[in-house]
Length: 403
Image (cartoon, rainbow, N blue to C red; front, side):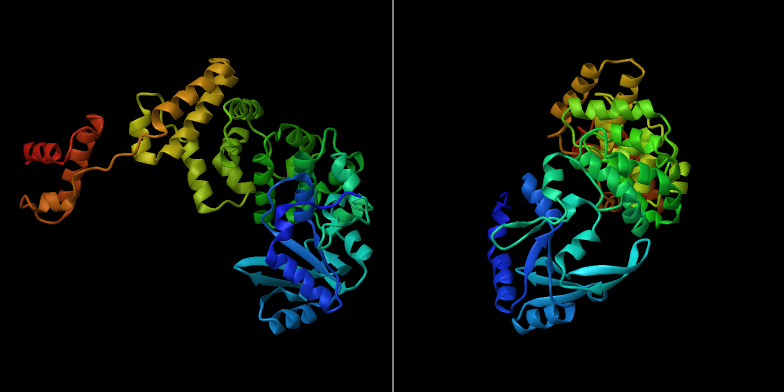
């Protein structure tokens, strides 16, 4: 029988947790993403566990053994054990009594199958014990092997319990599934898509950006469009720009940028802000990419990077080149070569520091005030025009000509 074989399973802290619970007569198992990703050989960051004992019992056991215990969500059965600064979320087996979208009234149980039946997808309801032996009550392993993302039980019922599962279905299908996606899941998503606007915009935004950041999101977005799911999030703008950007990233071996792809998908900031809840930092990046800063070229890259930062300017160059690829102004190969040239010329280029400071002006007898800032700007402008070459003494000499 297939078992979980991954290096992190042998972590002493984790093994000690298993042993501690076993000694007290409790069954502790890994569950969810850590098991799924572990079976796929993917990196695992969060380790979640399930236990057949009440949360208060878990809390007292951990404290009795001098293990830091945080009642993260004790009302819903979750206690976080912190060992060697690493968190382990331990959740009591549950059954839903009543659901309210993303919230639910739960009852605690010791029935592993009941706990599995309340989860979203079969591949997320695979459990593993201390040795890696699997407990698979809903055939999640088979679906994982067949790259099939499937709701547990009735798809409509799972979605009605939490409408955010519509977006999770598309994200998981794109990441772990194959095309075409599960038909029952698609039909259920289409049926309940109209409920998406009632969800917290932060959660919808988070899921949508995760979809955009997938290596190949185009089929997923098409499927979301065909099922009318996309119309309740954000109507597509220049679809062809996004296709060109994704292709350019892939050919250039660049990591996907969810915000860059969002601009390519819909280059209208006010429209995006009306539908998605973005952070100030995200808004700032989008605003930068959407403004007309002029073309990024080999000649302009240094000056633009000094002003806005290399990362921002490179993202801008990527977006601009994708548009040129889309309009057939350059080929995909030519666009990728241009990006590679940027990397080769500027990746190791340190952004220079302006050598003149306010003290230099004060030492010339200039009184503190607005004039200091004005003169510094004038010297800096000249320094930039000289391609950042003048050193401190040269800048002081130029300052003398202004005085």
